[in-house]
Length: 218
Ligand SMILES: Cc1cc2nc3c(=O)[nH]c(=O)nc-3n(C[C@H](O)[C@H](O)[C@H](O)COP(=O)(O)O)c2cc1C
Image (tube, rainbow, N blue to C red; front, side, top):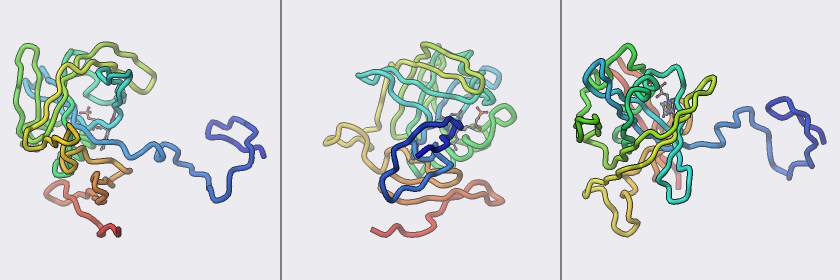
């Protein structure tokens, strides 16, 4: 059978196995993505630039090199051009309100840290390195290579430090406790905890709120 692929390429596909339908949202099959908050120094404000980030993954065995993708439109690209170091802060579901805000508002116009009153610390001032106090774990990254594409900036970085709060450390798995792992992004306003709880974010006159629309059936 000949099918049109998403790029309108004509390829000859052997019949699909029974029971499949085609989706016009292929990128959603690559989800959920874990949710992180990137923190990088903003010299113009002498404070943190904060952006929600999901498109990051290990690049090599040993997992000390990461690759991440940032939209050229985002203010954060200009901050990453000026700074060599930044942090990736693990963002569990209890920090989702921040993640939603930092993922939908641009720091070009708003001091997101100031508006949300998030607690943060400079763990180094030269070079400036910022961590979010409520995050159960964070990674310090050093930028190694930057590639500019038409729409996005691809950044390859080296992990030079990784830290977990002792209260969030699970000895058995030698990593975070499950409830402190990063929340997952399903699509648009809908998120998923690693334990399988669906959470929706929505706007109220007082800011971003969250709710679980239904109890997930086992
Ligand atoms: C869950 C979630 C994940 C996101 N991941 C990315 C990402 O990996 N790369 C990216 O460029 N934008 C991502 N965004 C969008 C940016 O966070 C958003 O455009 C933000 O407003 C940019 O802020 P800035 O202009 O201060 O840099 C994500 C948004 C959300 C809600």
